[in-house]
Image 1 (spheres, rainbow, N blue to C red):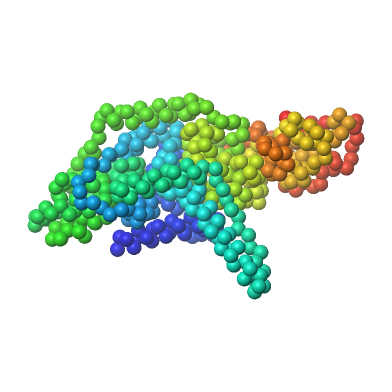
Image 2 (cartoon, rainbow, N blue to C red):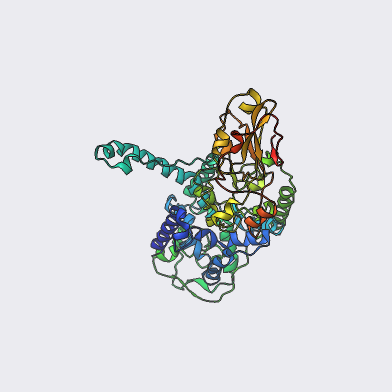
Length: 517
C-alpha cells in the first residue's frame, strides 16, 4: 500500500513538473509540492515578513505531522521515494550511528531567516529535486526528444508527415548544470551506501516535522510477545529504533511500517496514543553554534561581506519584487528558469553574492526576454516573482541598454550596422547625426531592457550594447503601468518604424533622453 502511495506522489510531482507550461489551465498548481512544503513557506515568511498563500498550502502537512509525525517523509516526499528506489541492500552488520545534523541545520536556517536571509531553498528536499529536474532531467529529455525526431524524420518525409518532418525541439542549457550534477550524484551515492542517509542526517524539513511529531497522537507499539530478534532494528531506514525493539525516537520515524512488516511474530503495530516523546538529542553547545552560524551568515551575506560579481549586470525576471525582499522570498527551485521560452533565465553563481546562488537572472547575451510571455510569475511558489498580466509585464522595465562606443561597429569603425535597431521591439534605438555620420543612440524612456539588442549584436565576445540595472522598475505591489506613466516612460511594443533613419541631417541636435555609454 505504502509503495503505491509513494509512486503516485512521485508521478504527480513529475506530471505537474512536465505540464508546468500549462499552469493557467491545470486544476492543480504546477508548484503544488513547493507550496505545500512548510519549511519553504515559513522560511520565506520569516525572512521577508510577507504573508503568501503558500503558508496555507503548508498547513495540511503540519497538521499531518501533529497526528502522524513524519508521515510526509515516508509516504509522500518524492525525493524520499527516489532515495528508497535507489538505495542499496540494507546490511545487518552494525554500522556507526548516523550523524544527526538536520536539527542543527534547521536552527541555522531559522536564525538566518529571522535576520532576513532565506537559505532554506539550498537544502530543502522539494526545492532540491525541482532544481535537479530543471537543470538535469529537463535538458536531457529535450535532447532525447530531438534525437528521436531526427531518427524518424526521414520516415516522416517519405510518408509526407509535414508536421513531424519539420518539427524542431528547443534545447535549453543552464550554466550551473555541472555543480547540480555533482551534488545530486554525491547524495545518491551516499544514499546507496546508507539508505535514507539524507533524510536521517541532513533534511531540515524532516527535522521540522520531527519536532512537531513530539506532540503527535500516533505512536509505534511493541507487544509483550516480542522476542527481540532485532529484525525491526535492522529494517528501519532512518535508525529510529534504538538498541531495543521497544525503544525508538518518534521524531525520526517516517512511519514506513517496515518494522511491522518484517516482524516474524507480528509484535509491532501503530496506533493512536498520547505518550510523551523523548526529548531530541541536542547538544547545547552545538545548538548555540548553529544559531551563531546562522546569525553570522545573515550579517555577512546581507551586508555584502561576500563580493558580488558585476552587480550592475544582475537583471532579475520581469515582475521580480525589490532585491531585498526577492532574496528573502526566492527558494531557488528553478521553476521560472525551466519555463523560460528563450532560455535567458539562468542561475546565479556569485552575481548576487553567495546568498543568491541558484537564484534566477537574465543572461541577455544568451537571449532576450520574450515580451509575449509572462510564465515565470505563474510558477513562483513564494511570490518572489509576481504573476503579471501580459500588458503589465511589458511595463515591468528590466533595465536599460547602453552602447559601448569603443566596441560598436558603427561608432568605432564607421561601418554600417542596423541589427540592434531592427530587433528592438520597442523602437528604443534611433540613429542621429554625430560627427558627420549617423550613429545609434538609446532612448531610455522607450527601452524596456528586454535584451534582444544585446543578443543579436554581431561583435564577438562581450556585446557592444549591454543591458544594466539602470532604470529598472521592481514593485512589491501596485501597477507597473501606472508606475511607468509616473516616470513618463513610453513602453509600447512595436511602436512603429524608425523615422530617424529616413530624415534629419548633420545639423540635428541630439534629443533629450538619448543615452550612450
